[in-house]
Length: 152
Image 1 (cartoon, rainbow, N blue to C red):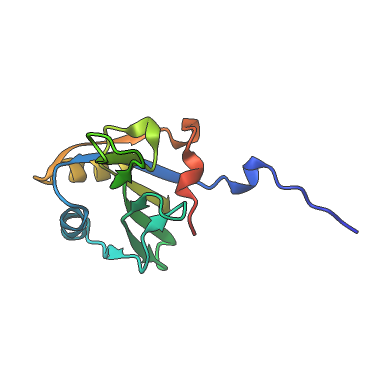
Image 2: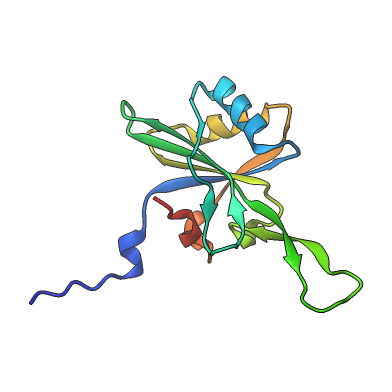
């Protein structure tokens, strides 16, 4: 019987990851990105969740068969309630969880798979959006939690 062992390189894919600092909600940013970049980001049917009753992250997706491209807009921060079982002064408090903990200051992420984009031009257009504080490319292959970006 033939056995194929998987290693971590089997899950590597070529994509660009752009960190975005934004003070607005994700759907407003998705609307602005659609307008400025001439794409059609649509909310995924289900949000990203990695654990039962764990943090949930919003996600939008644009897919172009013509250019063989997938673009994802992902929330990097999930704020939820943490229940403390003991009767303490602060029983319920808000806890922030991150999709990519190494990028704690980024509010959302733009993951671009495939396509022949001019990334510097794209980042410049994203930075021109009034609700965006800053946007910059990150080195995704150096992130410890890069496997959180594999969800399809």
